[in-house]
Image (cartoon, rainbow, N blue to C red):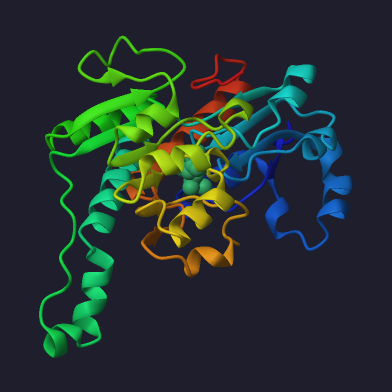
Length: 315
Ligand code: 8YV
């Protein structure tokens, strides 16, 4: 029985590549010089796609694989997978929820603290001799005890809020509806009102058509010159043009971003605007979490090809 052919959209750590190569006939799309030719040659035999949250699988890729049965996402976010195309053909989709929530939440809090307390600037202040030459760094802003707003109180948003409770922060959140697991925190229907009553606005919502640019110019204005935006979800949740303008003219105090439109080729203006912390989409980037994500990707593929129930199905 030939091994099922899998189209691999992006690289995985070696601890995943090895078992995947043993179990499947992997075709590494991301390494192909001529991707159209590669797809034309191998697409007709592909039964599964193994991808990553930020890479997904487009309608064109899916259409090039007439025998496609399942797409396994290495990531919780599946916004880059064309679910409509999948539903039309009964193609299953899986992701890796829960296993990364803790690390992503840790990283969101880390970005808040690092930007509020000038950790990156402080490291530079020591390295470039400013401390010796000029003395202490300019004073920073406190984080504990202030007001936090969570846009999207799903698994990751919940873990962020749980951690911020430990900082004695006043916590409010916005989501499609109040959450029964969030009795201690205030529900605010609209993001603009949430921003107006927050010092720190965390964006943790699963990206979708409905959340496109949910953080717009009005929300950034409401967050204000003392406020900070922290995004660990998807860049599409934020209007980047409005964000760059708000940081440049001081309408918004600061931002800390782990995700960008067109990443890793982010808008070069982000390197020029003041009061911003830039991170390379590493919120889930720990060995522990990535191993757990890889195990789930492989478990879902194994379940599918064994005709068993999927472990973490999306559709
Ligand atoms: C990526 C993510 O999957 O979980 C998601 O949706 O965006 C990330 O965890 C990860 O960066 C691997 O590419």
